[in-house]
Length: 309
Image 1 (cartoon, one colour):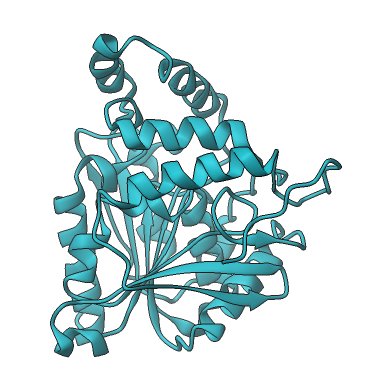
Image 2 (spheres, rainbow, N blue to C red; image 1 turned 90 degrees about the vertical axis):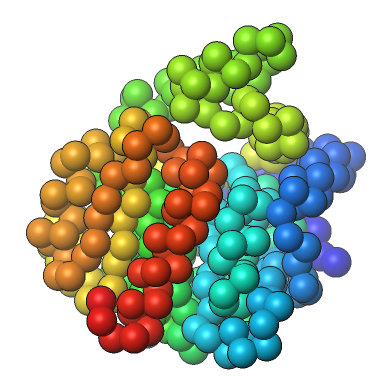
């Protein structure tokens, strides 16, 4: 198994682990979180121009479902494919699922060449899908992974059957309120156990009440250094170029975007796009309400495959 590099001298645009020991602690925390979901059928690594992409594959129990158009999951910034533990059981019950560790984030991919530029990010994802032998996929991205998916729909949609965006980046400039929420949430992970449920409800932050998720996030912050800038949002003109069937899911109390604004704007700019707001959640609708969001994503993908979307 390839592992991410550790180096004493940071390289511009290259994410890195602080030490081998902290990297292994992080991997152990990730494995504990993976264990809450369905086991991966296989893990594999594919080479791209930007490094090695580590991939987790999940297979439906029903052999007939294994030939359906697969789902590809791209996680958020500062995380890895373990964040999909609430979603892989439901999604992989009906379709093959591939979860990619993005180079430049903590995970088991190896980052060698900067890829934060939009055209390079699209090249990395296309090369990863090509190396996996995937010619047509339903792409799902959360947060920064949502920006990657949106960027792919704009710059390299040839392999995309559809795109699902879960409270994504790429629609608005990231504001101060989001960074304050991230900082306060990280600080709250150190709060006494008895206070965490109340803080989790106040912050809309499931990290605080799922011990394995909390441990993974805390160890990831200690172990890994992200070296890329925040991506710029796509312009209205860029969004209007997208022809891939698109489904936008926003948390009602999202601090990354303004949900009411985007649920009106995106379908107006992207022909045929669906957009909806999920109540009782903020930045993680697929974590807070996995059964609901899984079902809606699968129904959307089914409609695309039937040609009825």
